[in-house]
Image 1 (cartoon, each protein chain N blue to C red):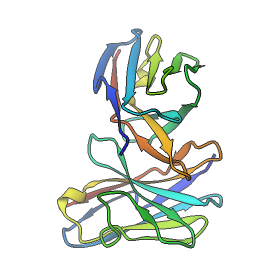
Image 2 (cartoon, rainbow over the protein chains, first blue to last red):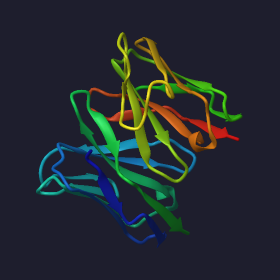
Image 3 (cartoon, rainbow over the protein chains, first blue to last red):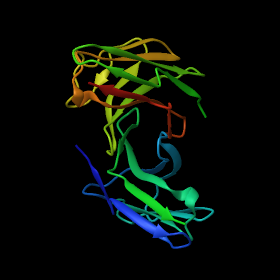
Image 4 (cartoon, chains in turn red, purple):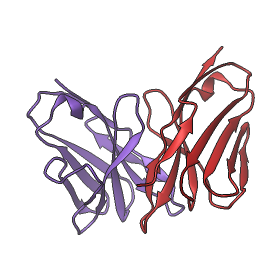
Length: 111
Length: 113
């Protein structure tokens, strides 16, 4: 079945530095979603992108969906310790929107 | 948004036994989803539970191992049967909003000895 790979797997950044995680699919996706999972917590929905080339911003977070709808990125500007967690991209498919999760990028922010 | 609760929040079980996990939603939903998250890994969909019909299982998951009930539009259970240490994971239920986003319960952390 369809899979999405994320890079990097892990990232350590100094507080205040920027961070980017990339999500890549071998097939065209109808949509891309992003979730954040804090340590010990459950995934929390951040955003959904559906249009080719779409860019959305949430405060310091910028989400992009590639022109070919095969890749996506999440960029965090000036990281804070509250950004610590694992970021997953995911995509919906099927009539009932089954959601398949990417491999995830674990972010550590060093104060 | 939906508020989801799960019971138990965690459990330690002996191999060969079974555990039933409950998921309660504060509103009526058509579909409920069950995921497994092995330590340090991503989430893998186990099955989709539609009220009034048999659950639909993903490749690699079978009903004998993970029987699911969906007696009404706000409740579902997942049983992990004949457990082995490889079943040690976090089990999460989720529901879908009208905008396709998934809302997750807090998860059940299972350790099998």
